[in-house]
Length: 240
Image 1 (spheres, one colour):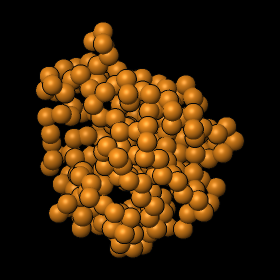
Image 2 (cartoon, helix red, strand yellow):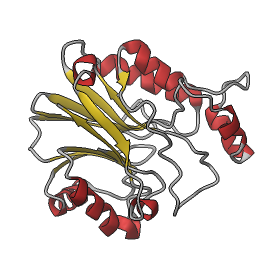
Image 3 (cartoon, helix red, strand yellow):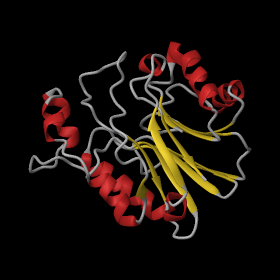
Image 4 (cartoon, one colour):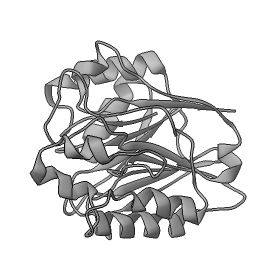
């Protein structure tokens, strides 16, 4: 499961925790953990029966990986990214929870290219999960981009005015598979709509080929609780 919980969850944390308990993910990638320390992440993880590894951010907001089993290895990437990346290896799976640059398409492309080069493994199960802030190359987004406020449109446009999808293209070119293709928008939620979002899919699960072959289903959890818990909907996948 991956979820951007909006500036640390604030007064929505009980609702967020209730969704996590309901879904019972084995591994959970969280983004936008403003104000969270490693201790706060551990406390929250304890409330939902999980272990936590939090990666702080120099310029943006922390991210984390939570898991049912204690991870065998963890790593935090706090440079070269606007936000951060938290990496945890649980069993035979390496999960990278990340949040790419929301403002600059070229910097976002560079972040995606670098992360892909760091973590792609032909024969290993790797998942890059999170708010990648990118539109996918398999969808016509031109009308959706036109409908958002002009000051936000440049986040999704190339210098020539065409829609920018290069972050996802970079990951696909490196070998990662977009296992959530076709699931529909993950922003905005019904209760916390913002004028910076069109009906976009910004939250992704990018899997290495051995993991992608095991994908059973991917879905966006839209209901009356997740409508109000964040401005992003959680994305849940099953592998096996």
